[in-house]
Image (cartoon, rainbow, N blue to C red; front, side):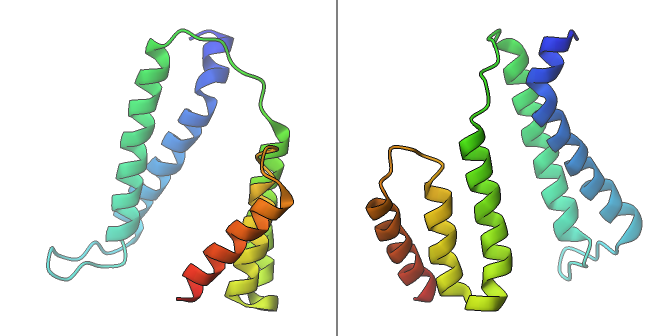
Length: 132
């Protein structure tokens, strides 16, 4: 695998590693339980297995496509990270509904085509659905 292909597969390989950590960590450190009474290790094991499967599918699909890498859009990356941070810190301080509104407002800035008015309307709608 050359350097360009490794860069293209970096995210997929990271997802595969994270999934494998959850899968094997739950197998070795937690009780899986039975089919009727699932233990605390069942859910992380299942999520890890699904994540590994999806990462392997994407690795194979990306290897078959021979395309060049696009430059990352840093505005989008920062908006999504900022939205996660806003929700994490906003929920204990403001409550779930206002934190949801703030999160949608920040995450919506990832798309420069969305106006502030559209993002605010979307935030209100999502907050109402969360409240219901």
